[in-house]
Image (cartoon, rainbow, N blue to C red; front, side):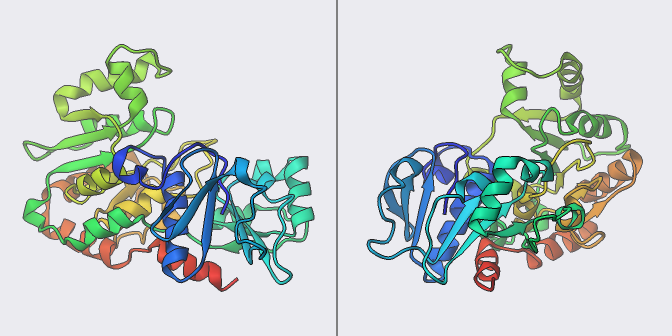
Length: 345
């Protein structure tokens, strides 16, 4: 397994915040190991170690054989077609490209050549990718959805009582991912909130901006959030996977935007995590259409008024929330399921 994004270590999931893509890479590697495979995972930087059955290495050591004299049966390039080009596989082996990005990159000449020369199996994560891929190279993309990371699955297994769920909404929307709309809805479209209701925004950029540090957050959003602090909005620094899973499992609703133009999120991994923790989702659409069952474990809404109404119900109506939460937990998809689907290719 190959990832070029950033340097990280597998135990970072308990020690520091990681991006959803890095957490997914770790979880899938460990899922393969749990299913009996010998796995070497290489990334940009980090310690060379063995963790939960996975041997971790760095891309710079790629000349070192992963499996002694044996070639790998499978090579999975994580989100980067250029990792495919020069690596050998066993005679009956396969190369896979797990791709949750925008389709424009696959039209880049270097990426097209990497796909052609490697004969990789292209794996999409969103039906929209499959529907809009022009496919002039003759590939037949497979569709495999991601899963929830283990800490969120474990948190969901705690079955926290409805009475112990706080009237908290959580969002990880970035400042350019529709966060302003979510804050406005919280302040303007929810007529009645529980007295201690909170919207927790997990954003390092916004937290730094509020602290007066150098940042790229627009002043208009910063002023909007400052004004909303008196209405229960809280800006939090991102947490480790373990800490975030605990927090998610005590919240009532996960707020997702999904309708921001020119944003190529075809993964929706946070949605998988929230649902596994038993926390329903409210969204305008986008990748959420592929991750939630509308009306069962969350809602896709047409406008701000509907969004606010459903958030209010999640926060204040125990019976309504309980039904959505149980469906979210029962319908969860784990990275073990993803590994099993990949084995079938």
